[in-house]
Image 1: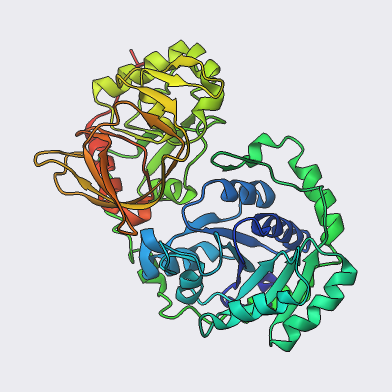
Image 2: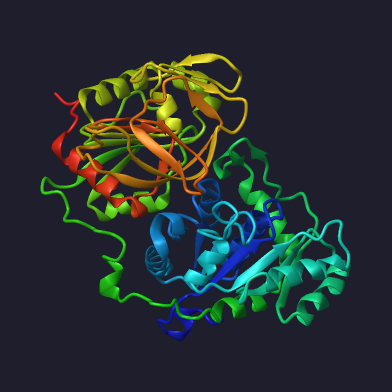
Length: 480
């Protein structure tokens, strides 16, 4: 595939999905190596994660740099038209878009394919390369491949990448793929240069790996001649046009209201961003910028107070429990946030941000630490995974208002091991799979404080209500 800047063409970027036989097969390791290798070859790359994951896109960002487009594609949040628009817009002038799948290729909500990789590949016309780790198998690898290729027809699988195999073994596996009519695009040898450690919420974040670049270089040195880069690019360049591609005019409006910018000028939205608060959809940040907002990043760990003249505040999720002592020790920031939220500064506090607003938080060592104290509860580590999966939210009680609105129906995702003794009851949550419901969350005309994470492109009524409230109240806590 020739680069578009070499050919002068404006055709769509090549697109490929890297999916897996299941969690733990090596998808993220493979994608990181492929992204790095494609950049090494001079290609402009955009990278995406299927589903609501925060951590994998952090790795993409460190590999590709600030100028690259990194985002999420989530059918549950955005629907087919929405993901097509996001992908089409985000490809920009990229030569290739790489989408990493989640879980197994056919896994979706419950025991269905809904909102999973297979559904996304079909909706966005993505050729698929399946990552398989054949450990413990011999000829049975053929049965695994045959099963994935025939479980649904058409499967969309165009190639296979074998993980943790030697060159000698790959030469025996390659014919199995070719006999079934798909390309073997290489293999990743067993290695320890780029092993991604995990913790309770998933992988350790990219920013925590101080030797990240060195690890990547060592990994790439091992795979530079084991991946068939030409085959990979050929499969990506053969991607069909997305069914129902949108015109340039439609890109700006489909699936997004993009209402007029606030009349009082650019809104300043304080955005907690540091090691403790790092779970932020980059698409949410772009949404704010498209709406004329100026995101103002600050660190609850290191800054002594909120930035001046904010119109709104976002405390995103992350790992506050790992930094309990530092957060507790920064009394200036805790006091500043408490004063701002109590004064009526519109605030979104999701998951880790919700825990930070509590009076106390049990840190990872079991010690109770003082937090912002906006809410009277205590956050504690549970006995296991408290909530996990897609949910639908609505306001629970008649008369409840969220950012000034009495009607609000939202799609969200929960994933947390911590819980609060006073979770609130402002929202009714229903599992997307239909097997459970509960209440939680503290909401008001100026506050959303709850465990569920919200994606703005799928919840524009929420995002617009927040910005409307922000346009009405400027917090001037530090100005004379």
